[in-house]
Image (cartoon, rainbow, N blue to C red; front, side, top):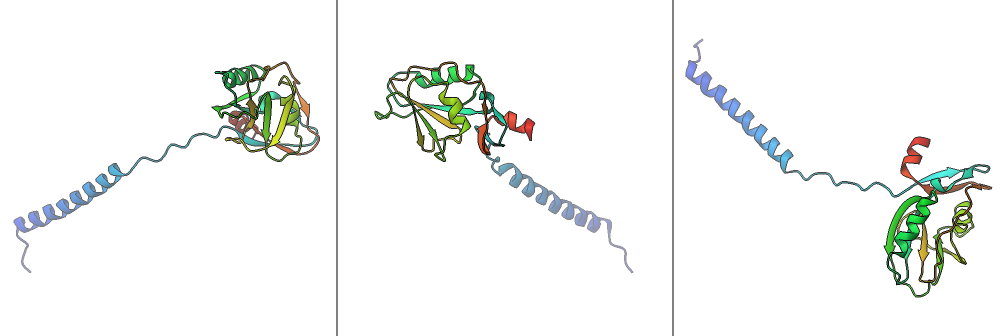
Length: 176
């Protein structure tokens, strides 16, 4: 049996190492040029189930506010006032609507809920409740030019039937 000359072994070794280097470069470039994963926005609120006999407080409710009127900053001041009363901060938006003079609550499901009972007590004037979805899962307060503002309301409401409330993410994480 003849021995393989040293230069042939060297050339073969360099060839294998070159192929491994080429494979590593190809894999590295593929990984580097891959797009970054999309950043997911955290939810504005999460659903929390409440049972008969539970107590609902403002801190358990996320509220979003829409300015349907022409008064600049009305939604922001309303949301700030509700936050000062203990409610969790949702989103702000503008949606011009001449049909909203005072204040509306947009809720899905139609039936009066403990959230509606509580939030109504904080809103001055006649509060119209509509079975309508807002742009977020949070309960939506829609204020018009005639809205008189936020007042001191009920600090708690006892739940009389099982309901789901969209509330702060941090609260849900510590309760679950």
